[in-house]
Image (cartoon, rainbow, N blue to C red; front, top):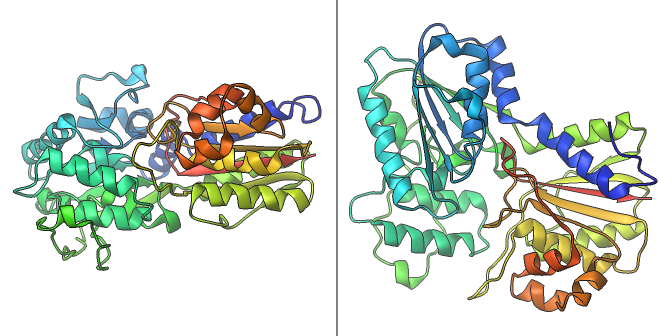
Length: 407
């Protein structure tokens, strides 16, 4: 049941956010898909990414007796479903957003898992965002230190995620569709939770079983000159069947349906007004000042170009603080920006929920909003203002949701 909008609008937005997350929960969407598309026989499971744990639980809910063996790889702290601790499944955790030694170990474990499966094995791959970092097998001549430096630059560059993942794939033996070669003709069903704009399947997790688009790579800084970048030349294989089973659009509709059921007017917005998080937040808040009353919903993923020594926070916190500056003094408007995986940037907070008094509260705590945005330190400001939101791992990852309420 949703909170009463008149007496508790902050909890209303939190409730709507939870309804959006429920619509794309990895456990429920995998279970629903497998109930209508059951495995023909025994299968081998590979689950990779931040929703891997929940997606695996959904597969077991639907088809546990048919499972022969499984490998699950997720971000540290995201093994969150103890009910499925099954002796047939090996569960690993690795680095995110930067790959670490465990990411390389997980990559080797993945190749061994595929090699050891029998020649007639049927595979079920469950892939969500985060797989790019948590599982990796780099090309010869590229070590962990190089991968970490390159990924750190990519994540702070402001580049779109499609460009970032194409660079990652160019240095990988398994990304850009190259993992499909290790199937050696065996059949695989690939179920995807989309965390990329336009739901381009080959961009999710850097396209482990699907080839990257043959587009030019973005220019890299001179310090990365000489990297052995591969061309996107892997062809799609007929033995891989791919299906996106959860997306940002589904999460937005989950929010909208809950709001409508509570008798609220809903305004679904097709696109974010800007790519940069701070610019986007300010633009959305400006729109809200003259927008009709009710619940407004946006979705997608912004970018943050990081300064040399960034502070605390992520893109949702950056967006929310920029919006709070515009909303300062305008009563009756609240805005929530939340990462659907429950982790905004490198923080354990999902995002923030701001109102007309957020800037004043943060300034009372000794922070300056403009300075915090410039230093990518929105999280520290919003912690002082009491506006951070925390969900823990959500079992999903479909980029971000922005929900606003105007009285």
